Amino acid sequence: MDGELFPRERTVIAPGAVHVPDWLGPARQAELLAACRAWARPPAGLRTVRTPGGGVMSARQVCLGLHWYPYGYARVAVDGDGAPVKPMPGRLVELGREAVAAAYGEPPAPGEAYDIALINFYDGDARMGMHRDAEERSQAPVVSLSLGDSCVFRFGNPDSRGRPYQDVELRSGDLFVFGGPSRQAYHGVPKVLPGTGPPELGLTGRLNITLRVGGLR
Image 1 (spheres, one colour):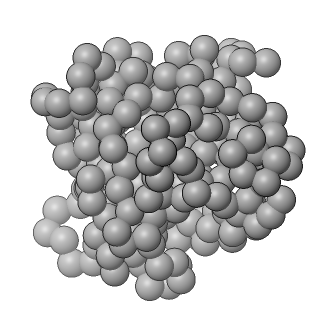
Image 2 (cartoon, one colour):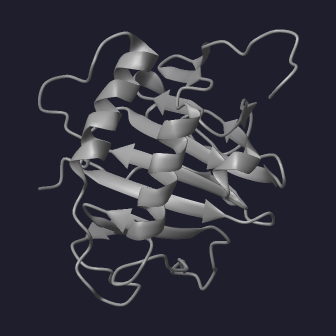
């Protein structure tokens, strides 16, 4: 945000959970947004996620590498059009490695190649309830990248959806990585802040790109 008195700094939110503000510059944000728009087109494109209990997630999603559905993974869009999932792009594999190095000061362990991407689109009214990323066999850190409107990101603890938790404002270009003791922490998005994204990006709403190592193949 222009005109801030103090620059935002890298912050350790919890053991293994690191927020790196403004990690993606404007050019990389624009490049990633263009790619997300291409990935979101059918087949196996952006879809509405329905839970087994009949609920509907307000954030829409597209998957790469493997298709996530509540609560597992498949090679086809089992709760969408049934098409084979798009492959995990090499640029995202490398982006995951860069992100972990930026957050932790060292790259992922050998063999921890990011092979799944979940891309969630939030409009101004969308939310994400407290949940854990628990369907992966690998405990490699989760990488989260934000584009567009800012949001309140609630990062909790591994034991319950309740307190203690910490609310962090994630803005366009921000990086958040959580692994180690925080890999199974509950987290969610209670609020999106409409109209806060950089105008030059040309995105109304928020995109969250989440990279994971499945350990499933």
